[in-house]
Amino acid sequence: MVGLGILSPEPSHPLAVFASFESLLAATVLFSFPSAFAISSVAWLFDYEGKKGLKNAHGLLHILSALPVLAGIIITLESSLSTGTNLILTGVIALAAGGLVVTFPENYGSQSSWKEINKTVVNQFISKKVLQLIVAYSIFMGFPFAVSGSALIHFMSMISDFTPETFTPYYIIFIAVSLCVGILILLMKRINYRKLIVYPMIIVILFYFLLPILPTLLWFFILDGGYLFGSFLIQIGIILLVNESITENRATALAVITLLMAIPTLLTFFWNMVLDTIEWEMACVIAGALAIISLVYLNRAVKTHEEQ
Image (cartoon, rainbow, N blue to C red; front, side, top):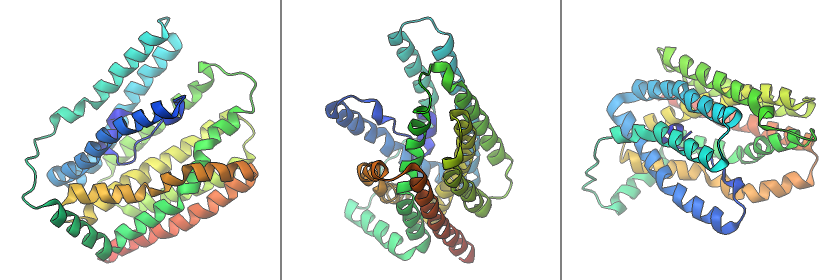
């Protein structure tokens, strides 16, 4: 997934595996550096390859991302090597997937001071309604993201014992979804933000309302495949829309907008406390309702862009 992180301003953060605050803090600080470079690379790719080039890059990357995931499945299920060796092999796969970074050209910097750059960034955010609406979407999706993140734990609690083979259907579904998204993006001749953002958001909304009635973990894997499909398309659409809306000091502006979109993650602990105090079914309904509000903001953002 490191390869996806190169093009995505919203990479996954599997930080819950750390046993202590010290190790979690160290991992978070270290992960922040490649995340910052990843954000800048998106602006670079848009500048040099254009909107279509960035779209095709995401499509190709989703297709290629299936390969390291498949390799990881084989290592997990078939390998008789030690845990340490498996971790090393997984790291090699991650480095190979992230090797695309070596193709980036050198950046000799800007002649403007950092104060001037950030002033233009603030002015762009204030003057561009599209950027404000996308940030609003991210804020309202804070709790729904917490629900989707805890859904796997909820359904895992339904089974008494599980093995690595238990998650094989999920990996297969993830590979299929990633391939479908990649092919769909590559075949899309004309970028239509309604097809990339608005319509997939409807799939995400259905995911939350259907969660309470799922009987087994397998059904969750299937429904989560639809959620991943919609989320991948929304993510690509937002990246393209934000890049198209930013005109000056793009790398810095994109980083700032991404930071604003990440503000809800600061409330993750609060959302988890809320989840502990309400019924699962109610949490899913609230998440679905907030997702509908988020859809309204996304639809307004797309409509505002179309009217410009």
